[in-house]
Image (cartoon, rainbow, N blue to C red; front, side, top):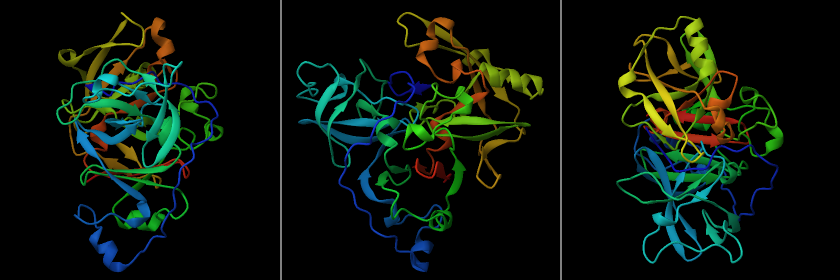
Amino acid sequence: MVKAARTRQCTVAATSPPRTAHERMKPLLTATLLAALAPGAAAAPLTCLGDTRPMVVDHQMPYAQVRVGQRSGYFVLDFGATVSSITPSGFAAPGAPTPVPGTADRYDGFDFFGPWGRVQLALQGQAPATSRVRQAGVIGTDFLASHIYTLDYRAGRLHRAAPQGFCTDATLAAAGFRALSTRDHYAETPQRLSCPLAGGPPNCVNVPTVPLRIGPLQTGAQLDTGYDDGRRPYSLNINAALFEALQRQKVPMKPRPDIALQLSTCVPGLSETVEAWQLAARLPFGLQDTAGATLAVPSRQVTLFVKRTPPAARACGGIGTWSQPAAQLGASFVARGALVVDPFSQRVWLRPR
């Protein structure tokens, strides 16, 4: 289990989205275009998805090139992180950008789909090992929630759009996407968050959270595009409250002590033990769309990692600190197709393949 280097999940504060120069083209919807965009087809992207940039996928994690001052590096597009960060060691020669004089975390000349001006980036000392790119930072939802982003893993494309002129529901559905609600847990402004799974304000974290069915239970699961579960595809972290609910419902699962984990926390020198369990192969399992239908996963081996956050690490945040049942999905749930994350309509659209 590899995760993008990130700071802890932080509760959100009311801020205004950065200024961007961004205009949308109206969608052109024709029968020919719809045919070309049938699920799995290799075709030009829908123009209504907005501006396009290359996206590199490494260890299931999506990367985009970002310019900071006079330096460029690859940043993970991490919807499971609420605070964007920079990893100086991830920049190639001649080295990393320097912060604004007199500060440790302010940087001028941040350019991601255009200039953002001066931004705040938390410092991350190291990043996980990668094979194709060097991780120079993380773009979290403090940046991503100001636009609609489409991550096309198969085509290696990243799109950004404003809500005006974005694809209609009919256009996305015709292209093979299914809508899932993120209501109350992800939005363009903190005022629209009630985050019942996190216990409500002031505990809200702006992370897309979608309905999940595990056997007879329904809960919410955070979409974490920075969580590489490539070694155990279709893995999810769950908190103690969800694990206990599964036990009460006698959901069939077996312990896997051979793959249990020992993870570091945001507290230096403090780690947490993460138990591993495997769900029964024929157990009903999957994400639920807005129509109530289940998007079943193509694997019969779904692994649960139970997070029991130590009391001394509760300040680190995350689902392990929540009293309500909740989960966090590995990247394999979305990394085989395409994902649209729309904070304005409070939905994500998933095309599994």
